[in-house]
Amino acid sequence: MSLKSNYRDGDSFTKKAKKEGYRSRASYKLKEILENDITIKKGHSVLDLGSSPGGWSQVVSEMIGTSGKIAAVDLQEMDYIENCFFLLKPIEELIESDFDEIKNYLPFNLVLSDMAPNISGIKDRDNALMIELVDKILFTVDNFLMLQGSVAIKVFQGESLDYTRQALKERFNKVKISKPKASRPNSKEIYIIGKELK
Image 1 (cartoon, helix red, strand yellow):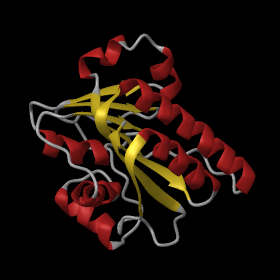
Image 2 (tube, rainbow, N blue to C red; image 1 turned 180 degrees about the horizontal axis):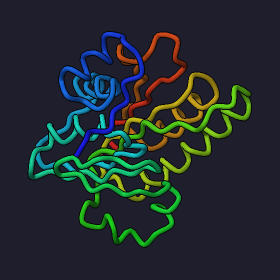
Image 3 (cartoon, rainbow, N blue to C red; image 1 turned 30 degrees about the vertical axis):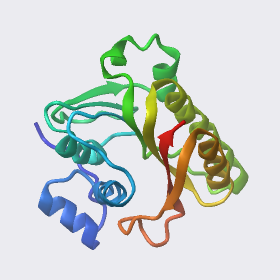
């Protein structure tokens, strides 16, 4: 089976991902977040939203071992990853289902989201779409994440960042902003981390 990849240019993180067998440079964003901000252990259960092509699930699989579990969700196909159960569906179908498909994974120790809406370039529209997506992620946090669990969510700088930070402050004891080195310098993406779900 061929690995689906996301090698789009020749920067150092892209080259490193190709050399080390990761499906995208995004793997190094998560590696930095997990190294600095979130503790993940063998046997943990993780929900990876917007998972394709699988760079984040690869990193998680290495860290949770054979006793851990990953449920990955995306609208695009994703090739097999050890310990990972992949759902080809929109997040709306996941949160509107009876959860039978992931009941053996619940509750999750960690919810991850590297999702983003299709960008139009119209600021107000893009912010509204991002906030709508964040609300769906928060639903999974409220229903699937265990007490004291953690979350990492990609947002854009601006209105969606402020909205998500406030939402996480209401739910978590600790909230932190992260801009991993593997993020492109001109990118407006930023990650919000919530730790210790109340």
